Structures are given as structure tokens and as C-alpha cells.
Image 1 (cartoon, one colour):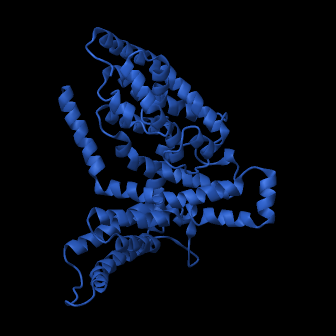
Image 2 (cartoon, rainbow, N blue to C red):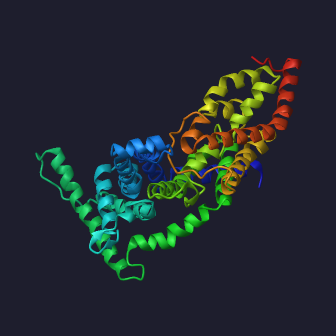
Image 3 (cartoon, helix red, strand yellow):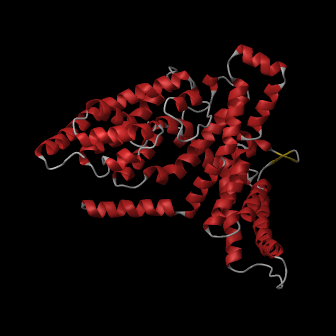
Length: 423
């Protein structure tokens, strides 16, 4: 297989993944929950801030209970919020009513949620029930959309207001989707699992969490991401669905554990979506903040000096398209090795530092994308993580340096020969 054939296959695979309606709905739906997670993260951070004077103040004022409630009603209900958003996004993919689909998804998920002595078991509305919520929303929304597409709807006579027509149009598909969920709930209640949510948690969620909890799984995912980037495909978008689906539940589980009073060392997970955001390529895919530092210090070619000055500020905010496409790093055989290897090494170094206890485990607090490097580490895990980011950046500098020097030497020689002006 030659290079062109390989590239065609890679592009085809990436296009199918990126264009998959179900993965897109999961990715965009979970992204829509970010404001809710941010509220819960900030509330939890304020509630457990380890400063005696602060703890005494919020306890005396009765604020601590309210802050913990803010976490409970957000991160501890993440499955419920995600269910609505995923159903909404899937319906939008099929150009149907997203709100109706989101409501049907929530109803179906609640029907499939186990009861505890006749009352709804709210533990399944947290990260524990997230995979069940995903599946319930995808299946029931797809049934709803299929009914609409097959015209299995109630048609109202002309002259009836539009909002009334839309309500009746969705009525029959909603009934069918809800009926399917109720039948499924009854049938799963007859199994040894007792419920659909318990079955999904036992058969799907636990094995996936065990797999994704292994650092080598994250290394493999990021390796695929970087291969796609090398071929000019936005690898972060392609693997984003998998990262969010696999690692966000780990963050929410850590936040729930922290809210329940567990110490940082007792938190269940080292990895999470926050870990990925902090360490899987600092400054952007490929760990290009390290490359920009190398460029600013060691570049001789004028074009590289100019690029470094232009790209360093966006790079500090994890925006690295200027250097990825401006250098370029795409299809650049000299720079391919550090481009792919740097984020993998940064992941392993960060994981090892946390695993041996040199740096505390991340609590799962969500930090918005675009937060400046070091500040995002400080907000997510304290000063220790900001220091760990500096160490990982320095390691990235060491990896990028010899490859950049070789590439820059060629660019400089071309400028001296007059073949390239450097302007």
C-alpha cells in the first residue's frame, strides 16, 4: 500500500467517524452539559477548599450545605442532563424537533432507571447511569425520528395553530418511544440484573471504565489522534466523542466522591477528561507549546522566528492551528516523530507523578477550554499541577529541540541561498 492509498483510507475512516450522527450527538450533547458541570465544579471547589478560616466561615453562615447542594444538583445528576442533550442533538441531526426528542429521552431513561423501595434511585442519575442514559436517548430518539419520517403522526386539520399541530405531530411517536421504554423496563426487570440501567452498568460501563482507566488506553487514543493530525485531519475532533464518553464519567465520579467526604488520595480515578485536557498535548495537539518555546529561543530562519512570535500567545491558550498549519507540521516527515511522541510522553510523565503520589489526584473539576496554560492546571488541581505542567513542557522542549534544529537549519540555508526570502 503506497502513501496515497493509506491517506485515502485514513481520510475515509476519519470522515465516517466524524460524520457519524450518533457519535456526534453524544459528543455535542455532553458538551452542552459543560455549563452545568462548571457550576457544580465551582460550587464543589468552594465547598471543600482546604482553608480552615474559609471552612469555618461557610459553615457558620450555613453556606457550605448550599454549595454542596449545588454540586449534588449538577454533577450528581449528569446522566439526566446528558440524556436530554443527547436526544436533542440526535433529533437535530435528523432535522426533527430536538426539544420533543430530549423530553422523550428523559422520560425513557427515568422509566428504565431502577426503583429503590418504590422510589427513584437517584444514584443512577449520576455518572453511574451515564452510559444507560446515552443508550436510552439514542434508541428512543431514533424510534421517535423514524415514526416522524414514516408519517406515523396525528395530522390536524388546516387552520389549527402551528404549535398545536407540532404538539399533535409528536404525540404518537412519543407514545411509541415511551411504550418501547416501558416494555424494555418490564423485560429487564425479569432478568438477573433487575433493570436496564444495572445491565448496562455491569456489561458496558464497568468494562469500559476498566479499559479506559488504564493509562495505555489513553496513550493509544492520543496516538490515533496524532496520526490523524499528521495527515491533516483534526484528530481532536475525531476522538473527542470517545474522550468525552469514556473519561467524563471518571471526572464526575471523582467529584461525587469528593462531595461525599473522601480525601483526595481516596478518589477513584487518576485519569479523566480534565487530565486529558491538561496533559494530552500541552498547548494543543502535539504538545506544541514546547515547540514554540524552542522556536522563540533557537530559531535562525526568519520565517520560523516570525511564526514563533505570532503563534506563542494563541499557543498559551491551547490554540495551535497557527503552528500546526503554518510551520507546517502536517505531512512533515522531520517533525512527525516529536509531533506524535511529545503528547504521549507528557501523558505518561503526568500519570506517573500522580500514581506515585508526588502530585494529588485531580478532583474532576471542569476547566473551560482556552484557559491559559498553568492557570488551567492550578484551577483544576492546585499549584502542584501547574508545576507538573511546567515539567511536562520542559520535557517537550527536550523532545522537540533536535528535530526543530534540523528543520530550522534547512530553512535557514534556503534563506541564505535566496531560494526562500523569509518574509
